[in-house]
Length: 591
Image: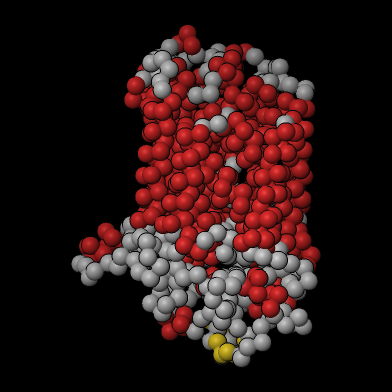
């Protein structure tokens, strides 16, 4: 099980000292304790040349110390981070190894602080609860309501399927714990994009961005949106109605996508609070399924008693367990798909108030909660539904509601699943916008996508208000007002997602997502191990056991090899698509 050892950073109060110039984004992210000290914040100004990302400035720096030859500047340091140890190794050892200073920025303007400097990362507004809701919101999407069929049919028995759900959760937990260490050591928006760039070089971060921005993020959002549309349409027209035109489903899916894009464009706080609400609703829905299952199991009561399962009382739960390694691999893959989304908070870690403390807390709270919720929900399915129904249905939750509560139950469960998908769509839209924004700041894509708001210079500021009005607007408005969000970045993500919704070929897309995502998961976690060796003195507010990333790397290699051997042509397409990013890197970034 991943470690939960948290090493609190040392708090130091130092007099003004002479330090080399520092990157603006690095200072914005690491000086996270200075939220209310405007005078002090003003001293954290960028010394980077505008328009050139610091990671690429390494080639222009002095080869002896890896820093630009510039006049030293005086800083007054009062931060919860003693970030001298975190900065020096990465900047000093980077010239020969592809490393770059923590917190690179290309000078693109964004969040307006009133001094002409704009960075989304300076809006430290996300709390532990917000991070928790983002992770839970994306993990609990449609997987627990559809994946049981694949897990059960391949595992072969209810007992074996429960083991798969536990093992899948623990394996996902190892990846999440590894990312928590990376996020604490490099507390910037962008997730794997930032980690790969700092550890392996910009080419690695660019290739991830190329795949994630164009396929991974919009593709996964399209799958969620289509499922949302199907369940909403079924809830409206009724489950007994025959085939419905797929364009009705896609129309509802695009409407849901536009709605969550609008919510997240209005303010960061509104998007985060929407995730909070849907997180609680998801757990309420899973709790209701569990309670209903226990009641049916204890009393034998149900709307359609003939459709209820009774074999769980008399049959060995491990009878029929598969002995095929290949089938167990498919079951494990389906389980890990249902847990996917654990890296969500890492895309917005630069906006967390206390990333070093809250990020590991988010991981070690969300994964156990989801694992327990999944186990209880699957037990409820076993108590109510016959094994053959669970193994064959892609709408297990609706079948559960129909058997236990009748038409009303199927309607309510259809709405629960659609609400869960809407919450997942909101969470992935929130984080995808930050990924595109980070790519724009690095110059990987046009800089317009790094703008904050519709204008790079201003957002809608809030006028003077009464105390009650301040309380109400404070629930949904950011400190800078409304529309202080990466609107253009989220519009790009919405446009690409809409294309995938219209095309709707998800078989190839799912394979692409599985191969590409676990390839980059593997690379990032290998980077964690490299960072441990090359930078042992780097300050890490959280440090997982070394066996944790090793286990996850082994699992990732296993899943990648299985996908390559099972579908070699589609895997070849994935690698070819990634390779296309190499000339694009030379075009956008240069040697």
